[in-house]
Amino acid sequence: MFDFDLSSLTYPLLIFVGFIAGFMNTMAGGGSLLTLPLLIFMGLPAAVANGTNRVAILMSTSSATLGFKSKNVSTFPFNIYLGISGLLGAFIGAKIAIEIDGGLFNKILAVIMIVVVGLIVLKPNIKQNDLIERLTGKHLIISIIAFFFIGIYGGFINAGIGFVIMLFLHYYNRLNLVKVNSAKVVIVMIYTSAALLTFALAGKVNWTYGLFLALGNILGGWTSSRWSVKKGESSIKFFLIVMVILMSIKLLFPESINEIYEFIIRKFFSN
Image 1 (cartoon, rainbow, N blue to C red):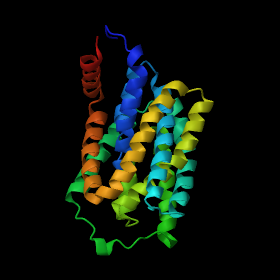
Image 2 (image 1 turned 180 degrees about the horizontal axis):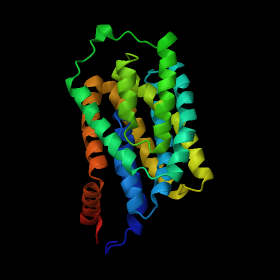
Image 3 (image 1 turned 60 degrees about the horizontal axis):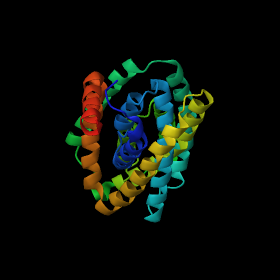
Image 4 (image 1 turned 180 degrees about the vertical axis):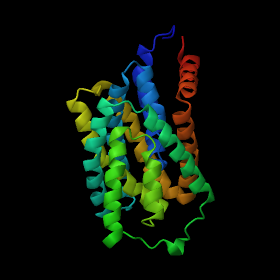
């Protein structure tokens, strides 16, 4: 595609971008905004890039889960219930992703992301005294149902799903944002295992690229999980707003973003 040799940069680049994506995914979401274009740019078909990306997501969420646990932040067993529900949906979503083009769905998601920005910016913060967690009874049942459908999208492409999970857990289940992130990584870890299995059985995973990307993701997820607990909700909210905006731009104007992405690669990594 370009007049420089990318082969010598492939693995360092995967680790570097993986670190940034792992950090972003744990703080808010949108790491796939970086990793999916990179994998496609490196020559992987879209479906294979989608499946390969799941290796990194699974490893980074596992690392982030351990990071939160090291800080004694957990929503067990609530997160397990939602993770299992999402897992069932992810089998369906991954199957759809293998067979159907997701262009139109991405456009719809972009509009949803813009609405999400509006909710984050305009909706008043829940006062700390009002954060009475709603994790049992009817709230648990409704959450389980909701996460089945969230899992379908997670299995389909996953990009941007962190924003949806964070809003739901914060505004419906009334978790503070630190606990939201700790629950999110467990839920995504569980349902991603189903999506990865589906892609792998269909032969849509490049394991070498996936494992190098995962190495960066693990480091980024671990660093972000511990840093977010230290910095608290204000830093998480900032990352959430920034990443939702970037994700919306990516989904609405994919060609423009890809051109910018390729320009950056060519500018900084050409011989």
